[in-house]
Length: 297
Image 1 (cartoon, one colour):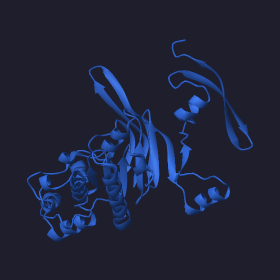
Image 2 (spheres, rainbow, N blue to C red; image 1 turned 180 degrees about the vertical axis):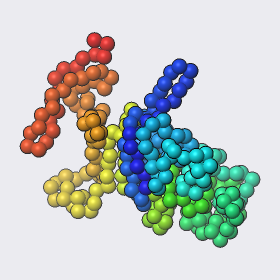
Image 3 (spheres, rainbow, N blue to C red; image 1 turned 120 degrees about the vertical axis):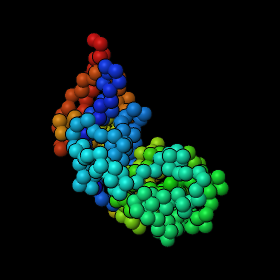
Image 4 (tube, helix red, strand yellow; image 1 turned 90 degrees about the horizontal axis):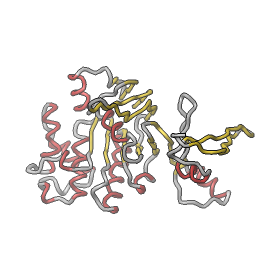
């Protein structure tokens, strides 16, 4: 569904250039339910904006459902945003029109496409658990219910890709858990590819894959463990609440980003230039810290 190949995004302000993405590589399969995490400024929201067609890459290749977003005309880009991708924002105000009912809000994207389909709007609202709220306006809905309406709106034109930017950020943990269940049902029922940017650790545990972005590049990936992998850990006496197996990503130049926790364990400084010794031993890569050299040395 998505292939990011050495994607670069540069923002220019006066004479300064800021690299939000620095050669990011990422592949997302059709029908995948996955999350993107990263600290503020890591590039995760920039990636979501690129996938949504809200911004264009500065360099590299970005393919979504076979469409090259770097080479699209403005007309093609508008059609892409209307038919290929649905977007759910953290702020429901960006998704909803307050003086319309829930059903009318869902019908609106259909009107823009051609004509409203009342039954389809009702079916989508039922799918997100709001079949009893069809004719309620926004001021009659809770924050979680408004976000469910926003999800139904994003699905109105049957997009193969659904993007969500911190969809649980403005609701409590119980409502957030319910919203995640809605995303999973959509993923399983419609086979919609879903990409969620989140800080919600509970949400991260329930998706198939978690991709961590750091300094504009893919840093690590966590994959949901299969039942036989969990059983194997239990047989080996490794009782843990973890549901995902984490892997550090090695880029095409052979570079990897060592997790912050491991840097601390090795006595290395994240904000310094460190020297380490790398050895191969019995099919394993061994990293041995030597000493640290300050950047200004």
